[in-house]
Image 1 (tube, rainbow, N blue to C red):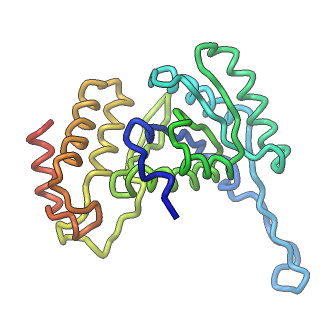
Image 2: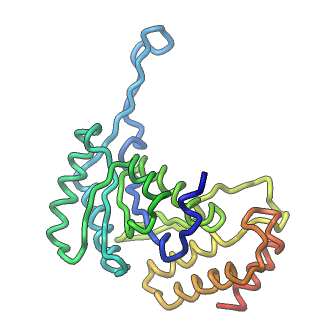
Image 3: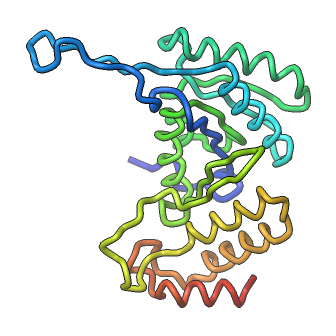
Length: 241
């Protein structure tokens, strides 16, 4: 069975996911009825506020315009099933779209989004979605673009302090062994620079990472299999930025 990604390159796989990460199913709303009995019912509530949804969507529109590539913003949801939560998301999305006529918009259900990310990733420029769907599709996106080892993310506060980090976990079993792939952390630093308006510096970080990946020096992106130590990669990048 041929892989649909085998002929895809950097020009095809170049998209960003904007995830709302303070609301939705992750707020902890809900509870149990008759817990521990045969009649037990578990309820998990998705809390979505107009202010929270609009804040996320407006940032996504502004980011798409700033990115200035395909100028296309896709809302990823499931309105046909989540008839309250994504009714709010879709209505707000369509209302805000009027303020950004230069941005092309479309809506794709989350299951179809996962399918197209693997089959036709070039269809996407910026994807915006809620907390849980964003949690899921960012991991898929990370693997599509080359793996968790080079996947960076940020918790963005457009009006305050933001936090940037690798998408992958902390891998404490590798502590002190100098074998971890540092590219995701370095790319997160590049994202930090971009958010601070240091576009030139951010592009230099990205260019150095691309240069390393294209050089063939790395045998693998997996910890302990890279052919270079963590510090050697860091030194190489610092010499090439």
